[in-house]
Amino acid sequence: MFRPAEGETIEMPEVLEALEKAGVVYGIIKERIAKVLEGKNYFRRFTAAVYSPPVPGTNAKVDFLISDEPTFSETPDGRVDYHTMQQFKGVKKGQPILKKTPAAEGVSGTTVTGEEIPAAPGQDINLLDYIGGDGLAIDPQDETQIIALRPGIYYRIGNKVDIKETLTINQDVDFSVGSIDAPAKLVINGDVKGGFELKSERDIDISGVLENASIETQGNLNVMKGIVHGSARLVVGGKLTANYITERDFIKASEVEVKNTIIASKIYVEKTVKARKIVGGRTVVGNLLEVYDLGNINGESTKVEVGVNAIVLTRVRTLSREIQALKKQKDEITEVLIEEQFNHEDAVEKLETILFASKYGASQNLVKKLEEKLKASSERIEELNNQIKAIERTTGEKMQELEQITPNMAVENPVLIVKGTIYSNVTIKMGMISEVCTKKEGNSLRFELSDEGKIAIKPLY
Image 1: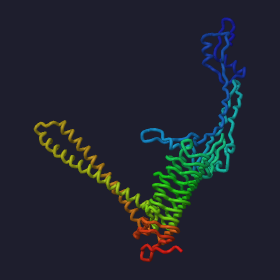
Image 2 (image 1 turned 30 degrees about the vertical axis):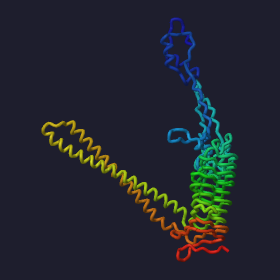
Image 3 (image 1 turned 90 degrees about the vertical axis):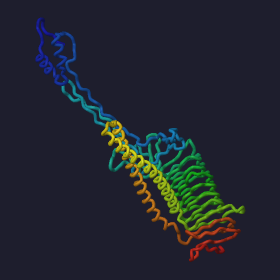
């Protein structure tokens, strides 16, 4: 408050001197003081200086880098495909799981007398409090984050997280569970319903029935009850074991063991197949096919191939289909190219005629349109030629691969063992060329290739 004597005024230097004597050295608001002095607003309180309050530090925070929310894919027409729901999240070794933003120390304040006001520091967080198992650790390269020590399934309960090597589902795999893609062992205590997909880098154990669902695993697949009909692919890097297999369109595995019957299925196996009975379908196996009964009393057509590398065979057939598709695509583009070339030549002739006539007053606008059409046609011809060259290059690469792997289809010393009965109308192919079709029943037989490359049939006992 300014209190001048009657008839007197106060100037800025006097004010600053008075403030200094009072110990006020910080936050002086000269503009406000000047305004009060200019208006001679004496005997009224006003703020002449303001302190800077301290800014407290921000607390550390943790971001969970893996969402707990399920993800979905869309169908081609834009609808949500609930079969693709993924609620279990797989992680890779070394993948960051949590990230900490460190606490900030804050900014000190200053009183009007120039004294420091300490700021309260932000509270830190101990990342170890978030580790819920031995699958995680603080990153030695970055102490602000937690990483996975192994591949597996991400688990979170509250603020505790862990990476589990096994995911156990104590129910059917259906719409409440969704599809699973994880680098962990999967244990399904129920059925796997049709339309869903299981992918794993390890073993998959199913206690119930595998319906028309696709499986892809680098480990083993064990289906306690059995595998029923469907077109969904089963690709097993290790051994497939099941109680039975019925009308399955595509199964590829390293080994197969079926306690009971394989019915009308297409199976491609790298090493060995063992089953109680095989009826119908086609079974391709590399080294050994061992069954009790082959075919049935009704003479249902049953085909088996032994001594063929099934993995190479499936790749050969895939390459063959792809090469045929590429050739068809090239033929279609070539037809379009020829038509475009005819149109281009026709436009060239028209342009030459018009340019000749232009000497006698022909339309320059028409000439311009034809020139633009020729330019677009030339670009289109170049584009088509480039597409043909790309197809030829891809076709050549696939044909080269085909030539390289085809000699590897044959497997040495293949064996087919029928411990019980082999029925009529069973086609047996061994190696690449030798083939027989049974006309009548036989019992306890061993089939192998002779030195001449023909199928030799011997008594098993």
